[in-house]
Length: 352
Image (cartoon, rainbow, N blue to C red; front, side):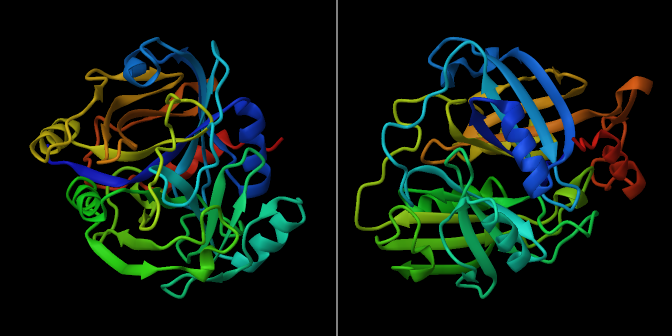
């Protein structure tokens, strides 16, 4: 089977209290579909957890307006650690989560009422879109970007995950990875300098090379239409030595721990990644279970060690009391699921 990348499935966030974080994003940013919640031990991730398996509790939430979800990840047998230094723009790893909004000024006004740390006003990106940045209550930086794409729930003022801002050390090397491995073949801009629009963000005064990437092809297959188009912004700081965001810490500690793509054709993807010099560092090989959901997952590292997860979804739960689920193993991976079937996920909406 040829590989198909259907879009960003989720961004992983290491937290101290998963239910608290889930409820905040549910109430304030519309991530109210609880796809699963599961307790297990992350046996396959020992290379990234100090050589010892970590027991964890995870919740996967979606926003049906369209976009990727949140995998909210809480270690159960250790205290998750914050970084020993404040992360600045351009540090190596995921700096910022991007979410889409069809009503950017209303979103800004609503978040302002929460007394959050709004890092910028609503200003324009180099491309000309409106956007702003804020810190969530757990110190994660979030960028809200004006975007017209919508899958469902048109009344929501904010949607799901649009992408990330990732710090890199060698832009040209990273461009090859994100183009050839992940298919981000459209360069929206490639700029160098100081950017007034960063004012208010940590490390904003430095000079950067800043590249925004998107896919030229529309997302296909399974849940591709729900996840929608995505973007990756690569950021190389030019006048200081960047630090690794997870220096002296482990996967699952506090902050953005990985970026996950929904895919089909895991075997072909694994072979392609190896040929490009980015072999899988983790591979579940067989179907794994996360509560009622199941699939096949693998991880690679980008050139700076940022973790990229791939998930080939086999089964998605819909309504537990009746045992209803979507089985994707029996479907053509190149065809989107019918919209009525995807909208059945709304049966998993958490209202309070």
